[in-house]
View 1 (cartoon, rainbow, N blue to C red):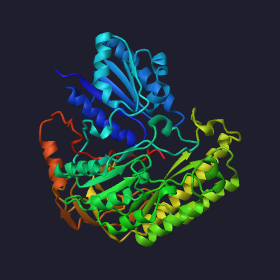
View 2 (cartoon, rainbow, N blue to C red):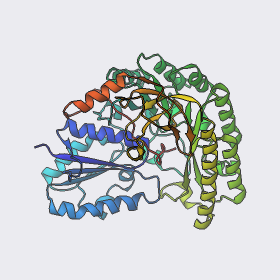
View 3 (cartoon, helix red, strand yellow):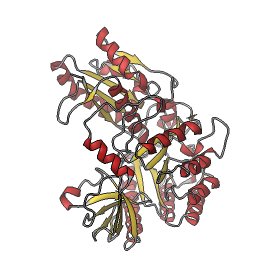
View 4 (cartoon, helix red, strand yellow):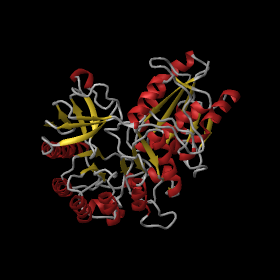
Length: 489
């Protein structure tokens, strides 16, 4: 029987997409996914290093597996991702029962490292300082049939003082446009109708081959692919957000009216301390131009509270920008020190009780505005892409869930939608707006069965088979929902 595996993922969308590659690599090497409730022969941790408790979470989870491994000598544990890139041999010192440690630049080495550790009976630690192969050329196993991440770049050229990502993922490396479009076409041929273009700094795409308008051209080119219905992207940097991108979004029907653009702070003084190369006026100007071109666009963001030196006046500036921006939602974070970042050594660290108070006030304002914005949508008719596994209470409420064009989550009454499948499209009328979702409790107005629904049905009807596909042609899938894990920006 094939050895079984489990991949546990922490952090941003980049990590989620990397885990799709890790599962593809393992299945390509003959491993099989462990059945639900059964202990896997190989457990892989794909780690994040952005938050302060990332280390504690990893070592706590590893310690829980120590007695399991002691009772099952053939079991293997591997640790990869950003924390592995940062801590390297420290992991095997703190957890000597770990078999493999690999970094962000050599995820393709995992099957070889596992076999080497098994044969040599000693831990294998392999951390590369730069990419040996662009990750999108690796086998990929995606989780479902209607939507997919498509990586257009890796790494970041910015030097934000709070962020450790550039040190762990390296300088920006861009894929050639033809390679990106070939992957999108391959996905569409398998039934995918939504793609999300993914990059650490997605709108800087083209810097490596010297084309400042490469990203807007890529959006327009995606819009010409027959069968592709929805295009999204994450996450852009405000400093590099140009009008040609806004024009491409507005003029390309398949580019959805949704934008996740990190703010981090509304205080110009804090933005300077963070080395964010824009100021609040520029940020608000981008939002104004986006809404002028796409009045119904939903804009989401990331915000850090309690950055070193933040005063009450700085925080009030953040609240001001939040009020003016009218975000449909925001990922909010309390600042935490990350060793290896410039901000970790800054003076004037804000007391935890002050950070907690400001965080609570920010979250209250974000939720208040989000609820007001969602209530404005009550009565509108929306076409939703039916999703899988996004409505945690669907079983109790007897509803299904889907995503609107602007990416808002809508829970809907399935009356009139018999046989609807994930990936199919339904038209509903919104009856209720809450801070984090919409509800459509009337009967479904229309159902459009799609190639994505067909692909979902085929996948779930067919017996499980290894899904890794080489030569940069990944199998189909959907980005897993990440309500608390925006891209590292």
